[in-house]
Image (cartoon, rainbow, N blue to C red; front, side, top):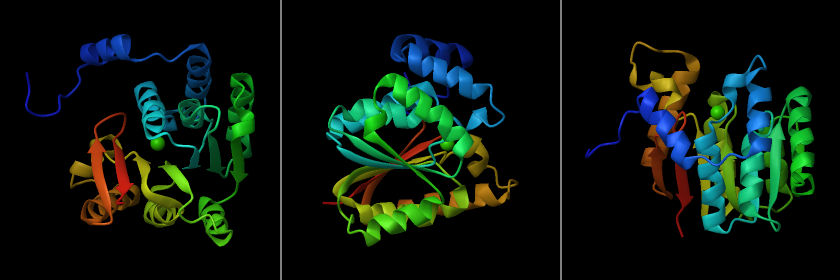
Length: 221
Ligand code: CA
């Protein structure tokens, strides 16, 4: 028994994977193909993907936006969780990575529900706001360049209706956030961001120690 969150040994992590994760062949294949790429470590973990799928299903989310799509694993999990009525806007700057994503989305039969926007995420978010989409989204997932997290967060907050949730990835940043000797720009950016969300009274929030740290911030009703 423990009154605090457990650290996971390799054995306990393997056990968790065995009795929790139901990844399926297509997602497993996408994960393996992505891991072989030079930036393969940017991919979310399978238990996190499954959790986000469950989360958007619980919320009954129908309209989502993702900043940082990479090869499409998280988007596929979110799309599956939202079901046939769901639509996800996917922002990324890489044609190369998102070609992998498109291939798997087609194979999963969800490509018609995912709209890929190639270009800087800030531009796409600004355009959505200019088009009158404020307050019309249920869910946002932020997983892109860490220095821009505050800018993505503010825009996603505006795009969500009250009760909508922003999920933000990598908020424990491999543990570096707690190591004061680590003053890398991305580490400092995540520390500042975490402190700002913690203080943000417009949301209810929780930082979950799943994957590399996943913060959920729910726009207050
Ligand atoms: Ca990430």
